[in-house]
Image (cartoon, rainbow, N blue to C red; front, side):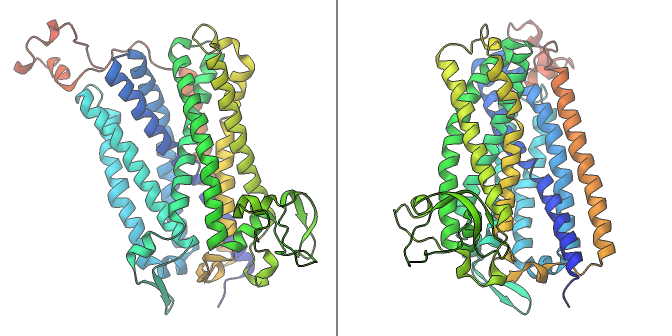
Length: 481
């Protein structure tokens, strides 16, 4: 018995909301942990107090975001069981194992070192604290890797057989190293770093714009703009690599992303134009209108002038994904990627001209406003990219093997609505609370007055232990926080 169509729609909206909110937080956790390690490494090597102050300030923002990511992540795992019970049971032999690996090798690993990173200042040595920060960054990246392994398997399932309603793993190596993961994981990791660099750029630009602590924020603003320009450029290339992977393994998804209905024109010739914008006709058999660039789609996807890109009309009607959402979310993601690169290059040009020094940076009012406002763009791009990926897989929950309606729980309309309202209230509260506390930390600004944390042995000196003799007179002694 299939679930009620209205119940399916409500549950899909519910899970779309939950996953869209959750994906706002892990990218910043991953990328900001890497940036924090970079800041702390700079402090460790130079002993410049400004890097320490930046670490402590951005660490507060990291903690707020990390908490929101954990809360929405737990909610998402609940939603799998509630809304997609048959899928969770069927995919358990693979999906459950991978999430277990993520818990052991990433989540528990991260939980141990994040305590040292947050509470270890002045209690452990600077070298050990740097090691803890490195491991938080590494474990966050490992977490993303395992999640992308699981999701990529849903996009390009391999190494399994679907027998008696269960996915039986026949080859673990093939399942883990499925065709999509090699392009999807680097693309997502770069997205996390790019979002985090935009976040740091926006925060630094806001302080410089307000002429608050310019001596602290002007330098990291210059450095992160250079890093952002490099990462944004590489991300555009990785997006192209992922597009070629989708063309090979999920051609229907690529056809929906590009609004490509017919492989050949009425004369039997290949002329795969790239549709800049367009709208499907009422029968969903072609575009009612479009603005297109001849041959561009062939050049982008096949790197040839007349390479064939399979159209949606080549696939059975009940196996075609929707067009409007993936078509425009893909373009939104690509446009935002280009805009971020242009702003970063603008900043690099200003730096090259010597206009981003501590004394002159605040005068670039328009640029600083653009940097601050840009903070919303990578979040939109991440959601748009996720929608492109997930909606493009429709009508499959496991591509070519299990349809969405077969993996959904058989909820009544009333119960599905109950869960939608409940999850929506919770997710809204998390988002608003996170924004409030992030803004509060920024309004309060960095702490520039508390003593700089010293090594753990110096902390012991405050307890008047015998091993601390002589520390108070040491010229490099700094009283820890």
